[in-house]
Length: 567
Image 1 (cartoon, rainbow, N blue to C red):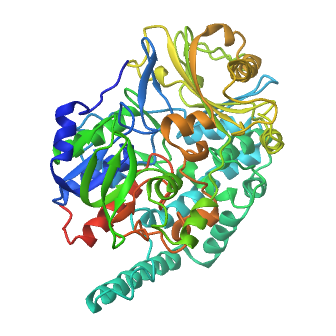
Image 2: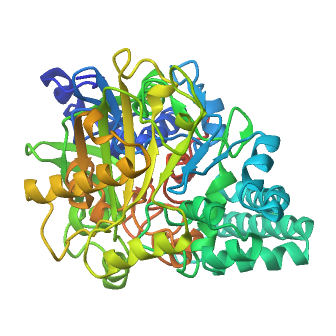
Image 3: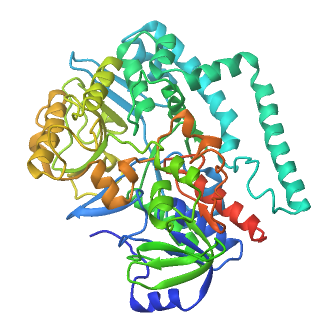
């Protein structure tokens, strides 16, 4: 199996228990590793405790079929914060990004197709095949989203300005510092709003509150273009393009960057595990002790209500001054924190947050590239149609909504929404010569379907074959090219990766769960009601995706609390 695990032998376990650490990080996902690296660079002694045999969490590469290395959960890179890439020198630590061009391919059953990418001339000619008006509107649409992303971008690297935590016990100096921080934060936001202007701010609010379908219908007339863009609004969500607030997620179309170029999503050589390995290497270089196969059973809390370490599943205790949790909010507060250690209202808010998921990931080994009957481009190897995200079964927004309605009724979608990627078209390190790795990100699959259960092998296989048959409609013979596959349904994502409900974002990314509301109202700045405990995963601001911002931001807040400067 292709994997690089870190210390998990008896010597490492002994070293873990023989000292009191300044900080422990629960979970070796990319955010946990990022937090650990910054804490260590700030002068703290830090240990990371990872439950699985391999670090990375959802950003992991595993060789589950000999010769084929799968990005088992997350599969594309764009959102990782440029500050983290630069400050941790991730390129030096082995992260190599492979830009995709074009970035999107949508085949149609009527024989047409739509290619999109960074080439403006290509976009114009491709969209004009469906609508000349849309071809003219598309650059304006992207420019507007770009402006909104520039407005939001500074917020991603800052802790939200909470108002009342520990106010009664804070010193005068702390209260003054806190007021200055809040004033600077809101002042900066007002300056950015002034630069954007009133009209654009109103349009921005409309985008935030509207269904994606309304936004896209106001811009375009072509069903295929609207559906291709609309998939960005529902990715990973138990929601439809008609769900209010889904317009916000359209910003992900241009939010990230690769090598300074906005809106470019890339593959990572060696798979997404290479991102985690690079961050892990940076953390180890800073002095972090990383231990795999170290499952945390419960946090240790003293009589005064302060966290003082963790209890491992083997019964051993590891002591620390502070703990940062990269687990989901539900896992952290409902399962790892002892009973009666947290306020009832806080626990209710955590319990009733939305962790629903309708996402399944299928990783496939194939003996040849899919040949799309709508695409007459003849290339001996991978062509432009194989480079980017391939949208299957999404020729209209109503098809997306229909697939969603099946899940609302408790059934896996009859015609699932499928995003296919073929990283081996660019990355020659993850599959044998002439063979390929294919990722299918599939919606919608309820956690507990009403017509069966995901633990039934026959039921699972039936759904996988349904997905393959749908691809066959666009690329005849695809099913016969499958050598083997790995399938992760919502319960699998919960059990294997630790994602509550199978939600890939550690909790829904609705407007009621962002910024000052994430994970719950009153606790958005990574601190928690339990002194010494911080949340550093995707369940904290600014949310999900392989971004690293929650980890970096949480580390900075923790360092501020222990009065250690960040190096």
